[in-house]
Image (cartoon, rainbow, N blue to C red; front, side, top):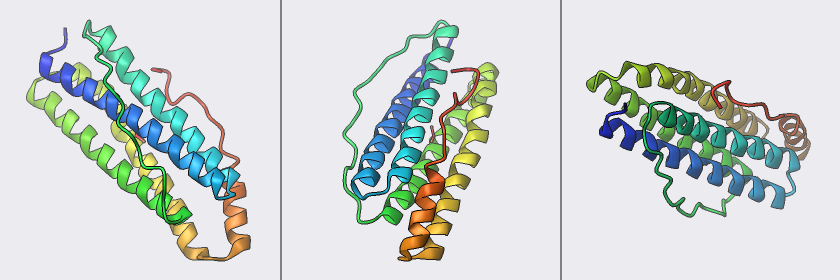
Length: 170
Ligand code: FEO
């Protein structure tokens, strides 16, 4: 049985992951509108991965006989100044998610809930990859600046990304 404090924090994280999904869908729409279909597709894959993250937590709460509490998803931004600005926002967002996962992990230590802590280890590792991927795209965009051919090539490369379930826990 989950302790109430842990259940509450997991439900808040489910909402944060769903908000992330919604944010990335909005970023996908922005990229498509800017004539960058590959980047749009890249964010669509992010959208699906974030739903997976929410689902992993959802499955876990149920498996521990907890109560899933699905809350409203707040509105997300819909406009950015540039493609670079979108990816920078994405990195800041991932950093804030890393922080909330770290807090959740610390809470499981304080509450001696090692089963939840073990499940969260996957998220700790995933966040390293999430931040690294976005940072690489930002570095590439900064390198090419306004070079149209360079942007075209990055868009093409990002469009190669395909979705696969984030983990067997989904
Ligand atoms: Fe669910 Fe991108 O962190």
